[in-house]
Image (cartoon, rainbow, N blue to C red; front, side, top):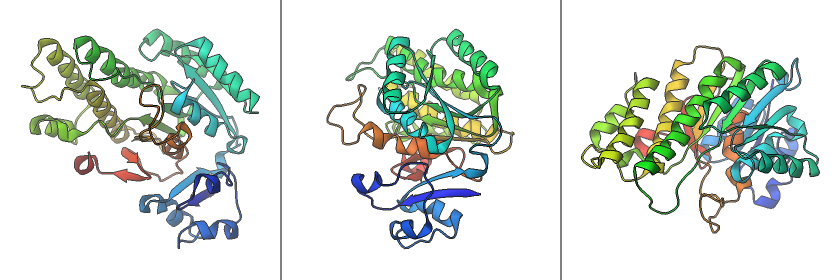
Length: 334
């Protein structure tokens, strides 16, 4: 059985009246369902694609058996911190692990959440170091014997229009290869019903690629090794100074996020285990250290789409790209 919270056109103050993960009588929600009914659970769930925010989660597994474990990377501040805060809502019954590269800052974040009454665990993680990923994987296996939710939020971007071999190497190395290595190392721990959410970006516009590269990226039989080869080709092209001739844009962050979006699509296609869903998303233009203090969205608002995808019910989308409360067609919209 599933419980859904559906909201259309809520202001921030009205949204706050409905804590994430709660269970509400149908009558109290009907006026927020914008002409739809909550009697048909699945129909109301898909009202997300009509522009209404919907949160759904499988009630039958919320507290059954071993604890459901969620890991959020890059979570000591910004969007990652907001994701942890929302997933740590006691009504969800999740054991949430906050990870960060800087251990002191990560522990400070956990302490801040504890001061708000939220019980969160901490583990250090630098997604650019395989030894760090291995240590996290071993700890999760020993302590929980499995993993149910993985939100890959960690990433980096150089400020301004910095563009060089080192910038391309570091940015793609962290955002694409780092995320890929985390998924590969933690994949054996994924339990039935696991959700993997990769925080990508609409900055990764495939329209910026040459037609030849677009065709290569969108191949339905593209594999992870082939995609990784494309990412390495971009890095090498920047090093050699011929990126433009080879059809790449002068934008390292954008290319790295194109890789994350396509990686998500491939992993979803290749996944054979039951009810394990992979999705990518853009949280929007959020006020963080990586963006601009005048950006229109708060980290709490930016966390809504990743959290929605982390709590997708059985039968939800997989391999999709989500932004602005809907699923996008990356071949047409990006």
